[in-house]
Length: 106
Image (cartoon, helix red, strand yellow):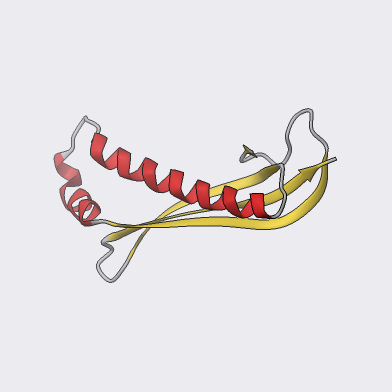
């Protein structure tokens, strides 16, 4: 399945717009509470473990969205938007949401 942030796919003519599809992932995030509390301690470096959590959340949300588009018979998803939010009473969870438009080629 082609997934793109653009509104078209070079070399492909969109025949049908099948509707908005979305995916979400909410990750328990004691790790994020620690991350935000200790962000000032990560100076000039990268945190591989936090990057992995973000990547995993993104991958899960994209997978959910692709599954929804597949059920609609889509060939691709265009106009994809990806958002990250801190949620929960103390902001201790990470929500990754992704949405786009499922399309079928001519």
